[in-house]
Length: 169
Image 1 (spheres, helix red, strand yellow):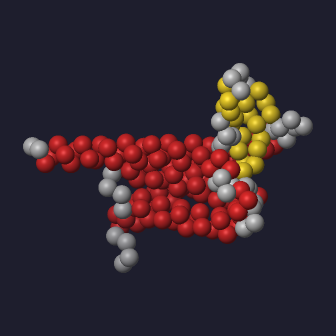
Image 2 (cartoon, rainbow, N blue to C red):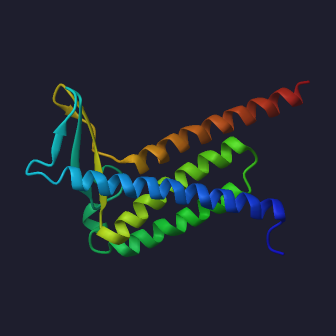
Image 3 (cartoon, helix red, strand yellow):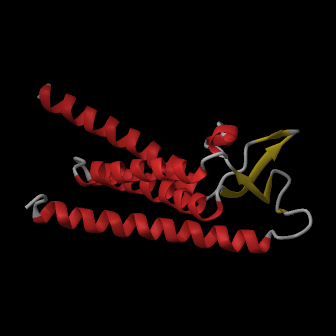
């Protein structure tokens, strides 16, 4: 058997988590695309936050747009490979927090991968701005990815502190 029963159970839970996050992300993207399908594509909510429909053909902050726009499905396939790698990493992660963090990252990434495969670009709609400064628009998938990365760093710090404490005891 390639995986133990424990690993198979973990894999099942992780895949369900990734699927749920991906489904939430794609559902919200669909709703936002419909809601913001206005002439301006923007709904002002506060003095610093709008819902603004934009599309990203690149990676984070639109980087490499010119390169990726010529082969979006190839790029999405590469991203899909990264998601598979994250899922495998999560199965063998040491702690529940680490598994949850990696699952969040894989779920967010999978939402963006599916969006790019379906639309040849990623739908963004969260727009923060202040005093003429504007953060690039992003989406719920990006929030899962960033929160997962932060939680992964936290899990690493906790694990390092625990290991350090046990060697000094």
